[in-house]
Image (cartoon, rainbow, N blue to C red):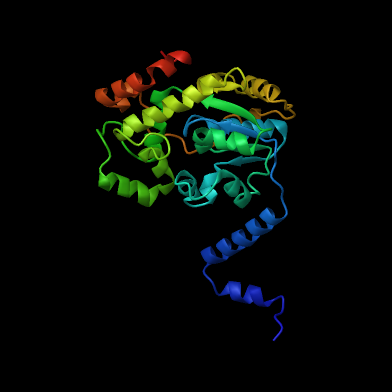
Length: 281
């Protein structure tokens, strides 16, 4: 029997609202991927998680009047794990996520630690790096996963809680693909150090933005960064400048109050040279 156009709506009406939304999102995403092309010359914003990349990419795109894609991996389950395990190549991931790579501005902090593969796939891309004081950067990460800064290490129960509530943060906490040894604070410190070293190695080629400088002068930083990557500022970002582009940290205490003395010393020892490089000492 021939199906009428009304029948899908009748079927949908019998499903739970969440299932209907998921089905519609799946269809829409499929259509978007089918009819969009990858932007081969995007501006890719790099930097560690919770270093200010979301705010920067959002305001860069708003000022330029173009579209931004924020945190691509959040749309694709554990595809980051598939990449890190070598079960998928970066070009294959780009093809799977074609719509999200069609934006003029693209950002996912994990790309920082896949930079050789990203540069190979996007040889014409323009890059922007964001760095932040590692002590505040790590405080932000631990706040996001609701882990206090005084813990000596994460036990199995703590990892289980993160896995249940914030599964996308597991690769950050366990150091997968970056540094897997040491306590969780040591792994996070090495992650910060490596991100800052990557930024320092490329600072003569691409703009590097200190998050603290961005906070002090958002319009000036956005205009200068757009000019550095060959884009033009067309819109005033003032109405958006103070938007919270990520959930704000609940605990804004100083690093000395947030971390145990042992953890704070560990961060400063691991990141010391990079901190000096960017004026955090």
